[in-house]
Length: 253
Image (tube, rainbow, N blue to C red; front, side):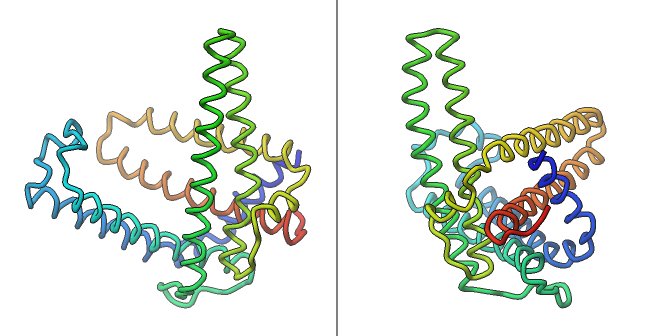
C-alpha cells in the first residue's frame, strides 16, 4: 500500500501547507496568465490568426517567425512556472520558508530544472514512439490480444518514466542525479508507482465528474475548472517531491 501512502502524504502536504502554497504559487501563476492573455490578445489584434479561424487554420499557413515567437513565449511561460515549482520543492525539502508573496529566485536551479524537464520530455517521446511502433505491429497481427499488449507496453513506459521524475526535485535543491541514478534509487518501486498512478487517475476522474455536474453554469464552472487545475498541478508537484524525499533521501511516508 506504499502507493496509497505516497498519494495521501502528498495530499496532506498540500492541505497542511496551503497558505505557503498560495504565497509561493500566486505570483508565478498570475504572471503566467498575464503572459498568455497578452500574447493571445496581441496575436488576434495583429490579425496573424483571425478570430474564429484559430482552430481550423492550417499550420503551414503560419510563418516560421511566428512559430519561433510562440516557442519563445512557451519557454518564458515554462520558466515562470518552474520558478514556483522550484520554490515549492525547496520549501518542503529544505524548509526554505517563503518570505512575502514573491518566491526566491534561484536562477541556476530554475534553468537546470528546465533542462532536466526537456531531457525527460525527449526520453518520453522516444519511448512512446518506440512503444507505438512495436505495439501497433502486435495490434495488427494479433487483434485484441495485440491491443492488450499495446496497453501493457504503454503502462510499462509510464512506470519507467515515473521512476525518472526524481531528477526534477533533485535539480530544484541543487543535487545532480543522472537518469541511471534515478532508476537505481527507485529500484523495486514499480508496484507502489502503479498504485499511485491509479490513485491519481481516480482523483482526476472525480474532478472531471464534478466539473461535468456544473457544466451548465458557465462562470461557476470556469472558476471551478481553474481551481481544480491549480490544485491538481500542485498535487502532482507534491507527488514528485514525496517520491524524491522517500526514494532518494529515505524519508518515511
